[in-house]
Image (tube, chains in turn purple, orange):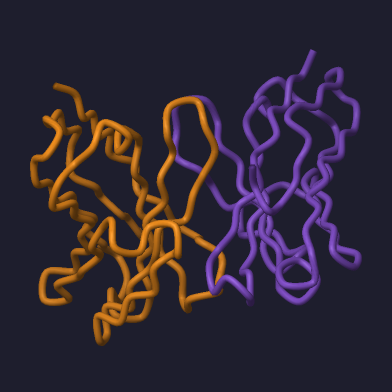
Length: 110
Length: 119
């Protein structure tokens, strides 16, 4: 069981908006920056959001990130079938001195 | 173009030694840490540890400390992950990724290397 808690799955129709939550504690999300990764089927993960809400070059603004207290949220608007993937949150844990990933959330675009 | 190219798939027996590699190109290798991430079949991502190629300092995840060895050869821009005695439970895809400092996000990833351990 991961220290960072994500819902196992979320789904929405094309064009709709979806949010994915990531819940942690003061030793990780509460005092460190959060990143989000997208893993398309059969491929390596890709950085989607860093420093809570910043997008790397090439990531469309349909993807957004936010953080409040010990939780973070990934938002995706204008859903496309190509967004079907597993999404992981990640951050540093100051107590464990380790990088943590959430358990992952499978997004299905119906 | 930044690239992390990993060595190919491996099939090994329990108890055998294995070292897999990750070669960086398109950037200054010593300016970025290399991290290793495990993904067991059908499971999520697990951080194993990272190495600073500048001085080969390694920070291991407590979950993997003592079970694997991470190293790097900056002269050939390559990082390594090795096992001295494999177990069936080591069967997984292993990814390398780079980051500018230990707690930074992973901005480029290797393609992954499938390791299968079976008798």
